[in-house]
Amino acid sequence: MTAREPPQVAALLARLDAGGVRHVVSGSVAAMLHGVALEPGDLDVVPATDADNLARLADVLRALDARPRGPFGDWTRGDDGEWRWTARPTIDADLDAWAPDPADSATYDHLFRTALGDLDVVPWLTGTYDELAPRATTREVDGTSVRVASIGELLARLTVPRRAKDADRVDALRALQREGRGGDPAS
Image (cartoon, rainbow, N blue to C red; front, top):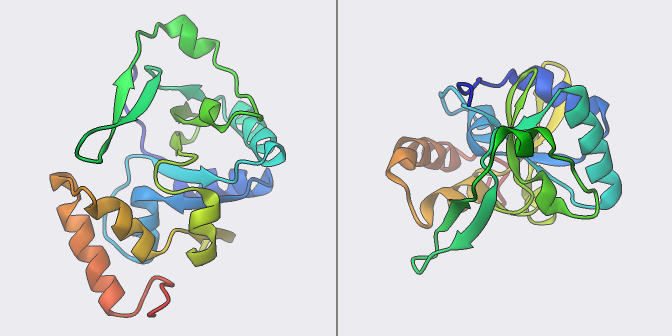
C-alpha cells in the first residue's frame, strides 16, 4: 500500500464536473467548504446511482488512473448502530483487476488512489444522493459549481454514534450552524 495522498480538491471537482457526474460532496471537504479549518485526507463524493451517471463516473475514474486502495470488504452494522468495514483478503492483482459495474453502485464503494489524490466514492454510507441533494448547498470552487452536503446532514452523520476524532469538526460545524450558515432550513 502506498501512503495516503491528500486530494487536489479543485482539480478533482473540476474533473467530475467536466465528466457530467452528478454528486454531492460530503465528509471533510464538505466541512471545509462550509468554513471548517482542516486539511482533508481525501475527497468524499456521493454519486447519483443511476446507471448513466455511474457510467460517467467510471469514465472519470479511468481518466484519473483510479485504483482502489483496498482491501475489498463489506460494510456491516454493529449492535451499537455504527457501520464497520470488514476487510476481505485482497491481493494487488485483485485491486488491479477492479472494474466498475454501472448497474451496481456497490462496485464503486471504494477509497481510490488517483492521479489527483485520494477520492472516496460513498454511494450510500453518508446518505444517498437522493437524500443529500435536496438540502445540499452550492459552492464555487475555483470556478466549478459544487453541491455540498448541508451542515445538518454532516452533523447527523458525525454525531450518531460520535467518534472521538470528529469532536472538533462537530463543534466547528455547530458553530457555523448557529451563525445561520450551511443551507439548512433554519438558515
